[in-house]
Image 1: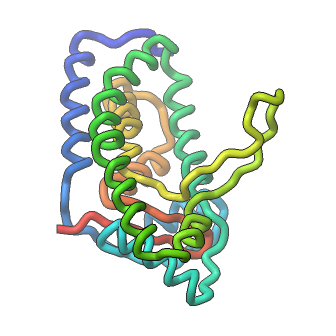
Image 2: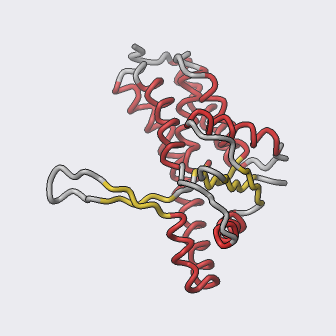
Image 3: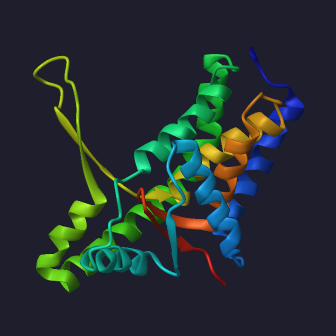
Length: 228
């Protein structure tokens, strides 16, 4: 159990924040085969066969492509974002269990607050709201169909009458929304030498570094890639 960090390790926090800040804003040529390999890897980890991988160069095109594939009677299969998230949570559990609870909380404050404020609150959420408004006007009656493909209803088991019986989540894996978590894992693995699953960590890093959004379904993955 790691209960504290040294002054030398604490000085590296800013360095790792800056590292992932740059990764979040980077634009570099993406290797299609590398992305396909990572998608196949995570599908295999989830127990699914290799999906068809469709690369697009904007979030707008990603959502339009989803509509077109569904309209062409493509069998896209079940949404997988929750399973993606569950696999990543296993990586988080591996690392978190090696740290004192107070230390973990402190690292979350140091890494998550600034990166989440920039990438999620100031970039992703406003951008998504604008994109949603544009598509709702453009698609008209078809907007409800797109929403049903993106927003998934999950039945819950409430313990009392005040708890919700259902929740909705969006079937999109976003690199911007995951930057803060990746930064914490990187620091814990590289600096604190936490034990981890190297394959899961490598896959998670590559998904964030090369993919903007992933719309993961059982048979098809639509990926908005960063491109120069």
